Image (cartoon, rainbow, N blue to C red; front, side, top):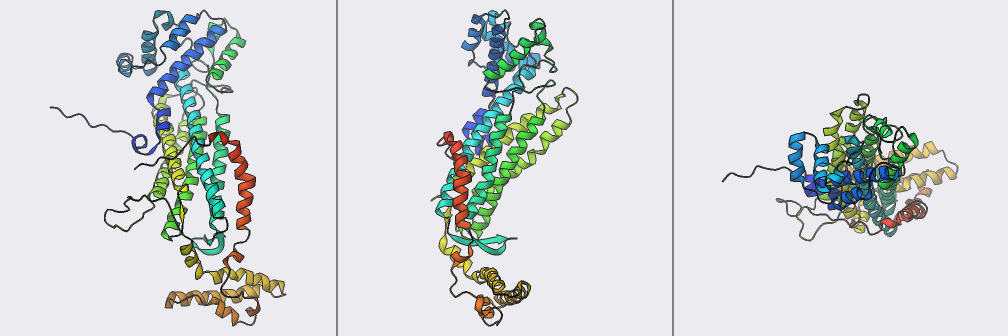
Amino acid sequence: MVPAPPEYSSPLATRYATAAMVANFADRRRYLLWRDLWIALATAQRELGLSIDSAQIDAMRAHRDELDLARVAAHEAKTRHDVMAHVHHFGELVGPGAEKIIHLGATSCFVTDNAELVMMRDGLELLMDRLYAALDALRAFAMTHRAQPTLAFTHFQPAQLTTVGKRAVLWAQDLAYDLENLAALRDRLPLRGAKGTTGTQASFLALFDGDHAKVRELDRKVAEAMGFAHTVPVTGQTYPRKIDTWIVSTLADLCASAAKLASDLRLLAHEREIDEPFGTDQVGSSAMAYKRNPMRSERICSLARFVASLASSPLQTHANQWFERTLDDSANRRLVLTESFLATDAVLNLVVDVVGGMVVHPAVIAANMADELAFMATENVIMAGVKAGNSRQALHERVRTHSHAAVARMKSEGVANDLLVRMRADPLLARFVPADPIDAMRYVGRAPEQVDEFLAEVLGPLLDAHAHRRGRFVASVGV
């Protein structure tokens, strides 16, 4: 018995991306869209006066879903042309009456480019559903933890205090910008339309006996049938590959926001302050049974890095399209466009899962703040001293000297922070030093109020504008 040859499938399709996004870019969807475009083209041509009868279009519609990829492969083996293989197969199904009007006046890019624009538009819609779910979960999380003091970090060194909710709205703000960008891109995205072989619409002008108005109306009608408000004003054989740069760059930008969130969570997991969800039977390590690795956040970062790496390809493809087009874009785009959407979908699937199940540990947060609170108080000490008429620079130097001495002792002897004791012994600083224990809420500034304002003034209205997305996506994280 001869063993079956090994097969490779992209892990994005089999392991990471959601079923809905995989289906959106599946071959079957692509080829059915080609048929939708042929139907839209023939319908518009008939409405504008070409000799096409309703029975021909009815036949195309009746056989639209009958797709035999093995039969297509047989045709392609002869023609060495994928679009013509589908033209022949569809023609077999619809019969000789309708077969002769399929692809009338069109070039291959009429179906390939227009179908890709439809898939990318619908892919953007799916991504916005996921972003809405992530932002809605972050809104609830930020509201719950709006006033939970926690250490803020600059350079990953303890800085002033913030709140857990304020940090969450920093993540949410990035993703909110991304939702706005995706919505704007979706609205801006055009269809290629009916432009002909090199974009001059010469074939359609010949079909309509030189009637320019009808050719323009044909272009508009095809776009309307495919759900687009407009087409690319002028094209070569393809739509401008610049559009691909918009799309993949926007996806990479979105993935960078997700990776920022996930990177912060990985660091917080190390500090034991916030954990991503961890299943009851989940195994963190095959060797170290105690491990609770933030593997979902790590996967977000890994996949986001992949999308970022793809963003340079459309730029190179766009730059290297000679005149009206060359075919060196085809293989590259077949990989880059689909993979960037599948990977971004996988990233957002994980983000929704993670932010919907984050676990905060207030006791650990308080313990981590304990040795740093005296440092947090120093800025207020300086401000109080200045208000009392002292030199800001002189106060700063005293605080700096005492702080560094306290840290040196903490590091060399492993003892608690004695900065308050040192400042109370300093005659310049003593009367401005707060009582012990220090109330952390005195040092979070307007963080709770900023959470409230952001949720009410920014995120709330944005989510209201996308309220139709509520419930359209629930994260599903397998392996």
